[in-house]
Length: 192
Image (cartoon, rainbow, N blue to C red; front, side, top):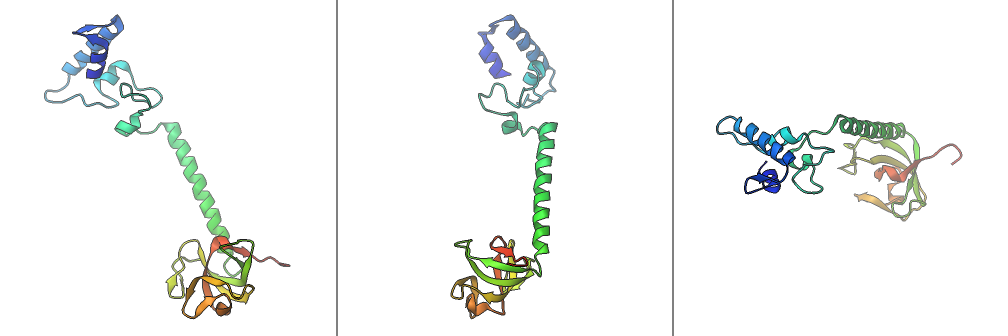
């Protein structure tokens, strides 16, 4: 309110009739406030009651690009909440589908791809677990990793992503279980 009065009046005289009416209404509302209370800037302050709610999320009298949510944490509109809700539902559905696909891999025979060159296949194995709390080499495999029982080494001298104990290379891990990143495993289909 003070900024509006300072901008639209000089020495107590309003610059135009509309400004004079607005200033008079603001002063009347300000005098009606309970004793000792202040008109704190916000979406329901004296200025907003006279001039109307801010349009399109902007905060009037705060400069270009300043939004009400930047200052007051104004709740988003109903349509914004709906859009955000739909985005969260879509993300949840994508994650749920991804998890369902990963769980379908347990027990499947997979190729372990190189993390340096995803076109190279390091070994063939069987997925034993996708549980991030499962241990491989005494360490939890973690999210987006799987525990794989190595069946055949294709690039025998390649180093494991997570070596442990005496298991340093793919060849060392034949017959053992190792941790391998899920994005670098591909299910082997009949004929592969």
